[in-house]
Length: 441
Image (cartoon, rainbow, N blue to C red; front, side, top):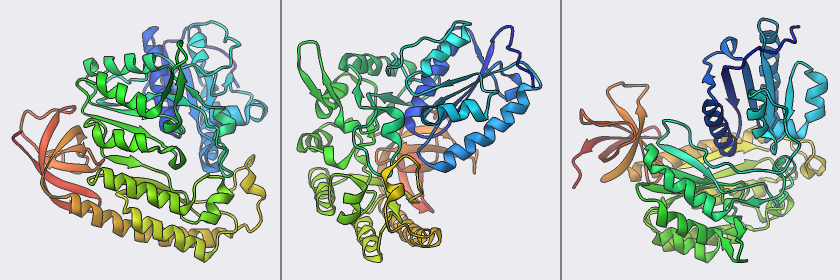
C-alpha cells in the first residue's frame, strides 16, 4: 500500500455522518479549507485530503464508516492521499481505528477537529484538546444554516454514548453567538437553527459574573436577527423547558412555532430506567403549556421502542403520548445495544423480532397522524422559504414553512431560491403539501 503523502494539498473531500452539530462543524471546516486556498473535490480520486467526520450514536453509523474506510484504503494505493478520521467514532474507539486501519493518517477526537487545518497547511497538529467554537458555521450558498451555541452533554441517559464522545457541556459566549447571527443575513441566510446536544441547558457566565440562560439568549438573538425570517433550535431537553422559555416562544415573532421535543418513551418506568429525569405526566403537561401559550404550535419528536424490560403496557403508554402530541414529524427507532452505556447490561433484553414488531406498529400509526395533521395545515396562505427545485417536477419549487412543513408549489417566473414568498396551500399528497404562489398582501 502506498504511504506517500501528496507533495501539495490542493483539493479536499469531507464526508459527514450523524447529527446537525457534525454538519455545522463540517461546514465550518470547509470554509476554513477554502479560506487557505483549497478547492473542493467532487470524487475521492481527485482529493489530496479526505476527512471522515463520524458518528457513534448507533452501531450502524460506525459500520458504515468501516465500509468507507475500506474504499479509501484502496484509494490510497492509487495516488498520494492524506486520510483523516474525526468526530465521535474517532473519540470513542481511537486506538481501535489506529490498530485496525493503520492506513489512516490521523485520528482526531471531537475536540481536535480543527487541527485538520494545520495538517492541510503542512503543520503539525497542536496538543490542546479542549473544545473550541469557531466564528462561523455557515456554508457558502446556504439560505438556512446552523448556529451552534453549546456542545456536550451532562445528562448520561443510559442508552446514549454522546456524553462519552462529546464531553461535558460548554456554552458558547453570548457575544460570539450574536456576532455570527448579525453577519448571516448579508450572506443570504433567511433561517437559523440554534444547536446544542441539550440546547436549552445553555448556561453562560460573562466577565461581569452575569448568568445568561437559554431564554435570555433566544431573546437577544431575536433582537439582532434583522433579515432572518425564522429562528429554530434543536434539540431541547424536556426537563430544561422553563416557563420563561415557553413565554419567549409565544412572544417572539421570529421564533418558529414548530418544536422538536424528544419523547423517547411515554412510560414513566422506562423513562426512569433511561435516566431521562422527567416522567410521563411532566412531558404531557409541557405539551399542554406550549399549546396554551401558542395555539398554532406543531411538534416533532424522537421515539424509542424496545428498551430493556419494556412491556406491552409500557409500549402502549408510548403510543398514547404519540397520539396526544399529534406530531407532523417523528424519528422512530428501536433500541440497539450501545457498548459503553448502562442499558447494555440491563435485565429484560427484548428480541430483535419483538422490537421490530413494536416499531412497525408505531410507524404505521404515526404515518396516519402525519397525514392527518399535515392535511389540517393544507389550507390558507402562508409564508415559505424557497429551498430548492423539486426533483419530481422541475417546474415546481420546494419550500419550508414556519411549522417545518415541506411544500411543493407552482411559482411566478421570477421566484428565486432563498426568497420568502406567499403560497396558497391547496392539498396534501403523502406528507407533502401542495400549493401555488400568490401575490403578497
